[in-house]
Length: 463
Image (cartoon, rainbow, N blue to C red; front, side, top):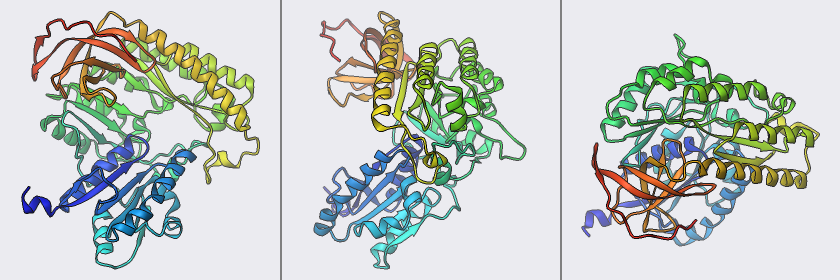
């Protein structure tokens, strides 16, 4: 190893939360690498350690607090290490991090990511400890820097104006701020030219895009502008709001061949009174009508969702309404949670909180129903061949590759060759709650060129 390589500093980055947090971590990584730091998996020896945090639920907070405790020992052995906390929890707790954790040097909120390099250097010069949680600035000036070779995330907006009573996002991410349409399209085309074949458009409410621009734009304008982009094989987005899924947006998605049918559509509850208390701006009937119109326009639509049980005041009858909506909507996947009160949100002030044991019971019943539906839906694809984009080796079995179909479901299959970033056709052998186990039939030998794969010896199917 050369002396130049040996002398590089290192950084450790731990990310919690949603795709927006993952995107912010890509920006942080790029800034640290511009400072000539290289990534490491060893937090104890890293010169810089960053925790990019989430605060959507209380257990997300506790994970970060517990992990930070380990760094007291790390910093005793490595006193020059700079420990930074960024993201939503940093925005929420601010100065409290410095008071509670003597090992923390820098706290950077969601609006101040661009200050990370300067603050780290000031700590290294011995100028003290710093907190930056001002609600000014954004990261739009930082170009997307994807860590994957085949996929990229591109942010189209920041913040949220919906103020759902259970959600802390508007308090830590701020009000809606959309990027100019031309900037979004330019960045997507740039990452595609660099070899990324799949793009994920990101926003707290991605389809609320453009309301704040002059002249106003909408999410459909982006989808239409990206139609026919050379090299863009797959277009995904996270996370839309049902109230802003207009027919114009649905038509734009249906008209763009790159649009993937796996769409996340958070419903949160299936009861109208609970939805009203959540301030969700739609009824259960309107949600199901939206699902029907989307399925009519996008034949390969495969919906996932978010559901909260035990919201303050929820009765057993209202919970049964949620179960009924799940039966009718038939989601292929759901992220299901019991309500977690967040300080500062209206939901935290409701006096009719549901007991924890009731929430737990309802959550288990919902999970059982959704898992049953997921397996039924997935079994319909057994014996069929689907096209997936290979994401890499399975974390549990290095002899298997894993990827996702346009439907968003995971698929595992045996393969010795590394096909990461290529498209593959896989015959589904067995369906599970999480996705599929399959057999490779064909793959790209190079971009756009396919070759058949000779039959492999029979391998037992395992979960």
